[in-house]
Length: 377
Figure 1 (cartoon, rainbow, N blue to C red):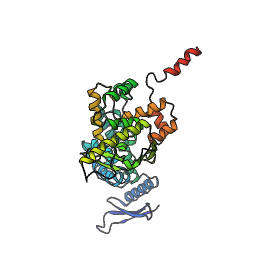
Figure 2: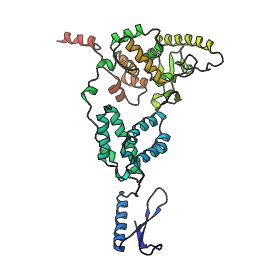
Figure 3: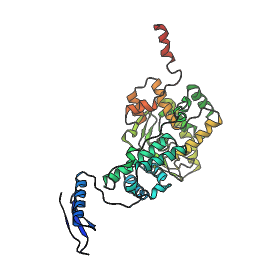
Figure 4: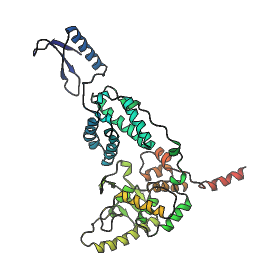
């Protein structure tokens, strides 16, 4: 790669350095004004050309880290990801915007700066998983800065994750999946509670709450005991919800359902028939299986709120609505359901993820198998 140094025609005193910078397609002609001796100007040009050859050259950029993150979110994340991913990344970037580091020029940001932010988040009591996600978002964002020749190296690549605390690591089993006595009690005391049928459907199908709220009757075949997952709903920050296709191809799937699940769905149909009579002319032609009494779609977050109220009211072990999905996978595993089939049913991209995250061993699940050990010994 070659360049040249010549007297700046504007003032006749400084030197102008000129070189071609490789890029996508045509090369870009770059120039730089230098004040000093010609020998120093030539040395600077050699250093620049050497750094370009080593892919270590970047133009001086004064934009602040906070400004860069906003443009990255708008120009990259928003157009290449689902809105939920964008919203999640936005909230992680807020940890930067809320601090002085936001005004620091991006080329002056160091690993120590970002590690200090991590230390503050840990001190504030932010969960290990949330802090780790923040680090991942920063690595993702600053990798793009490296690719665009704004940074030579990614300062977030060497940021250390915090150690999982004993409190976070020691999650009671009841908070992961209910034991069978808790399941039985829930099915008894929950009858008649708001959206109880929705909770039962999650236990019977393993659907995500968004998938359940996005399920329309046109995707349900009661006669053949099948339903198709092809849409999902997401809660909007600030209120409301919106529909979209699932994030991955594996999430779009057909599910076989049980006869008891069909009975639940028929019960919902009967209830919605009464709602339709109360809202003539406004009830949607292809209604949602889980919806408001007016036929309008349900915000997934509302199901969580009502579910927590229900289990607190009846003193059930603490869990979350999403963990009913874990319960579904665990119960099928206990019934001998094949791991590959279970992974497909859950809409996962890999069998290992299903095994590691969704298969839990409940107390007593292997008691019958263990009886055989006494015979052998």
